[in-house]
Length: 87
Image (tube, rainbow, N blue to C red; front, side, top):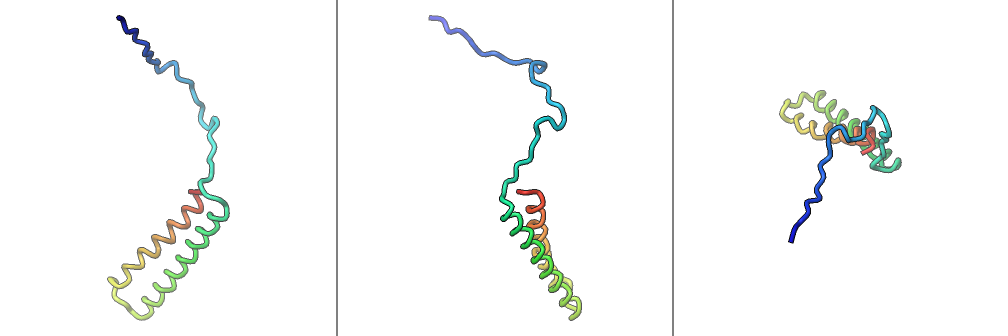
């Protein structure tokens, strides 16, 4: 009883050569309506965070109390970039 080894290994030179930009397409991961929603959320969240920051600055609130605004700005940034990058 003999077993024939039929494994073939390719050489690096046998691989097809791709040129820059050859057949590369970006397929959107979300629909245009969902991108619009995320962009609207990002802008709205940013405006709300700016208003709250302005109120806190006007009343002279301590810096540590302004720290949670980081999460509002972060959420607005994520919404904006998700809409922009179509992910």
